[in-house]
Amino acid sequence: MKWNFDRRYPSVDSLRSKAMRRVPPFAFDYLDGGCNEDVNLSRNTSELREVELRPRYLGRHVDVSLKTELFGHAYDAPFGIAPIGLQGLVWPDAPRILAEAANRHNVPFILSTVTTATIEEIAGLTEGRAWYQLYHPAESSLRDALLKRAKEAGYDVLVLLCDVPTFGYGTASPSRPV
Image (tube, rainbow, N blue to C red; front, side, top):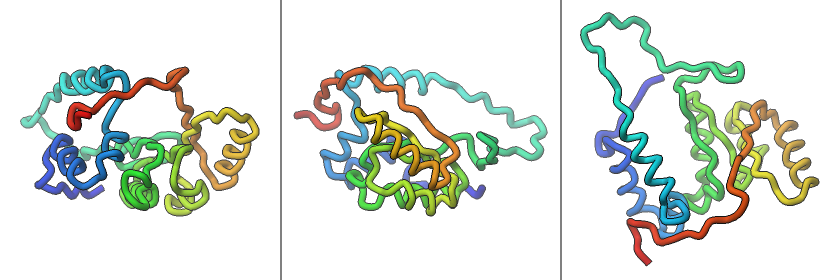
């Protein structure tokens, strides 16, 4: 995998600032925010920032690779594109754009149940390598129909969503007070 870094965005925070300027406020808040005063969002962010990488510059490194095998497929990186509901709300054609990018860079793309693209379309764009995330609907017949479509479209990996048993109450984002 060839990595092309855009030097204008050296960190996630710089990408976040750019997104805040480009994405409509209601969509940015949906994508960026959490519920209940962003408590878990803040905790997750602070715990990730505590992780330290220990460079080893003076050792001999041969065949350094980020390749990872998951579910019988070798991917070029140990991460992929997570499922986001209503991606098309954040950016026009976002599911298609992200699926094509994931396929081009050989990383997993996980299609959300609450998507703005069809199961079949994303399967085609990813050459059958997309994963499908089931957000369990209230109706079992709807669940069965979604799973049947995913299976027929060639999805080999099913991602189950473990969510809270009830909706949380949102608050204003720290970046955009009410």
